[in-house]
Amino acid sequence: MNPQAKLIFTFSLLMGTTITISSSHWVLAWTGLEINTLAILPLISKSHHPRAIEAATKYFLVQAAASALVLFSSMTNAWHTGQWDITQLTHPASCLILTSAIAMKLGLVPFHFWFPEVLQGSPLITGLLLSTIMKFPPITLLYMTSQSLNPTLLTTMALLSVALGGWMGLNQTQTRKILAFSSISHLGWMAIILAYSPKLALLNFYLYTLMTAAVFLSLNSMKILKLSTLLTSWSKSPTLSAMLLLTLLSLAGLPPLTGFLPKWLIIQELTKQQMAPTATAISLLSLLSLFFYLRLAYCSTITLPPHTTNHMKRWHTNKPVNPSIAILMTLSIMLLPISPIILTIV
Image (cartoon, rainbow, N blue to C red; front, side, top):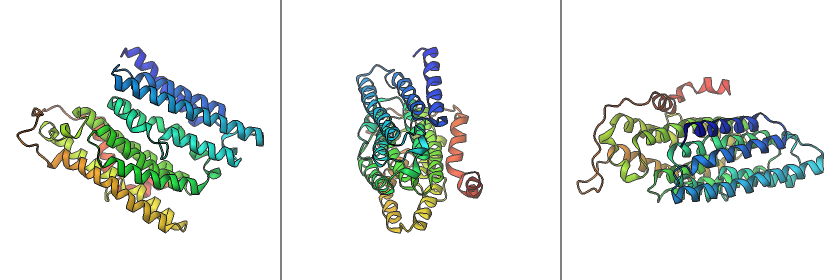
């Protein structure tokens, strides 16, 4: 892709995100979401492969439908209350439509079917953008309207997302699809706490972004798109593979790594809200996704492929690890001890 075009699309992405997260009017927020959608489409389809074109088409159709629903819910609310302010969403029907629209944008169950397919058709860096930056504006809208949303609906969608995200990821061999189901599962943890502690949902999103960025960038650095290629990565870059193991375990939420912090705080908050059975259910359902994180971690470090493998052995390279990957991985692994400082900032 032309560097100037790439620069324009990246700038548009940042501008669309900034417009949405800084606006208090529904039409401005909707404009930012549309700019975002149009800016990411060329980045998805830049390889001109049929799968990439299919992914871009699916993404466009789903996001257009979701944006129409966002506009419809805000118009319905304005019709009944005379308010266009985002925080003044009070009409029950508008709240229900908005929850469905944002769930479509994010890929929450039962509107999740497009997300793994789109991620599979995109390059790894575009997949990183889809999993992190593109989810930030919808999460912000949910944060601003959290006091009006239906907690029962959010809890149901969250539990289904964690269950299906873990269950459907078990059988995958493509790393991008595994990370897509991982994203759906993490969104479930954010959705379940949103109505009770919106700041905690945002903290979860920030830490999820940190860990996912580390995983995507390391996979991109080693050019890994499927598990069979991951099996041979140890011989190419052992240090990066070892760090990838720890980052994946952090993404799974195992103590004493960074990923344990949001899960711990969410379970604690749910217990305070007299929702101990829900906290138990979501904890047990997250064991499903733990299985495929362990599978990825096992493939990246412990396993050596048999001699009958169809893949060529990769040469060991002395190329230094990208500093940004090193910083992200360190943060993804070692933030739990300073959690009191993080909580005072949040």
